[in-house]
Length: 248
Image 1 (cartoon, rainbow, N blue to C red):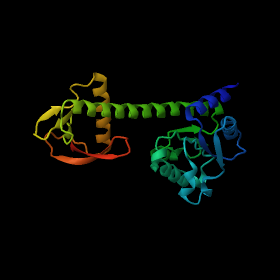
Image 2: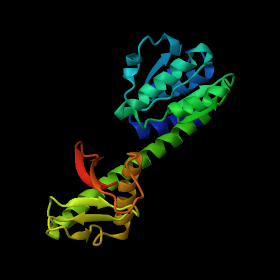
Image 3: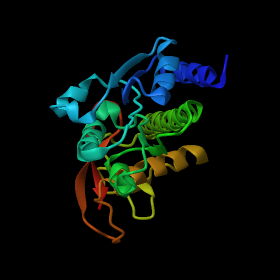
Image 4: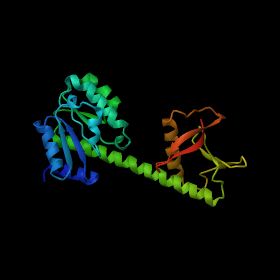
């Protein structure tokens, strides 16, 4: 088994299986080697020879899992390529998929726009297939690590709720995240309780990092001390948007 086949096999084991779109001419040798090496292992491969042939952004709905996105010479289609990448990234189930663009180098000034649209990596169109697969493999590993962290944070969140219940803290208690990252519960008597006092050091770190990230991403986070409470939608990745009162 050569290097290309080995990498394709490893990637397939991670994805189980993959749905890969190759935006390239099927006759292109580099793209064909990558596509065929993945297809032989049971992955779903779809070639699209020209990004401009997509009449509607809905035409990219067939992306169902991981995707390698090839640009076989952008030409006048670079704006369309950027639009498609933005559309893919806007779909919840595709937001963290590995997305690679192969550039012919003639449109280097557009690379910043491609990255801004959501491309993970831009490689030269002459990049050997094994290096493309290696980059794809590394992106998959990073994606899975991010998903594990989310699951870990969710587990920690569930564990802390159980701890609060054992401490007889009211389920209607208000959660307050201070500008320093402390998580406190304000019970129905107005008493402030340090919510993670009984949690492990690792649990506190994960929980703080998780909530701080959510707050900062929501752009509602302020370092002003003593700011009034206001409701913020906090997604705990359990399929339900939970409303919490968070110090803003």
